[in-house]
Image (cartoon, rainbow, N blue to C red):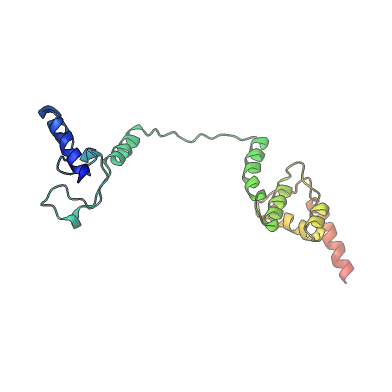
Length: 180
């Protein structure tokens, strides 16, 4: 066992003070696999602390983690939420970032829904509903219905891309008369 022999030679070369210091930190000179890391800083799960301890009762712990959690609890500063007012531009910027994730989808249907949300919110530089309908092989009415549903669900006023409520009612009445 060449490693064991080298380990024993190393141990014998140490002074008594060095040996005592290493043993005090948990260094086990009888075990060549011992890295010399102190027991208090090792993670151990089920490794008995003493020969008399039952292995099944030892739950293990990581003292570094425990100390880190205790430090975080001491250092945690509680900041009260302020009643911050957001401008429309700030809200739109936040929404743009959230909707950008939807826009990166690999599914065309998901990207279409993201664009419909932008239309309902009135975000600038959006395609027309007609162009969107052509792109996704749908009717303009289907796109309009999606946008209108989103607008109602979010309790928003009609956006610049949409007809007013009065115009929608007028069209609805005209369609009903036409169907009769």
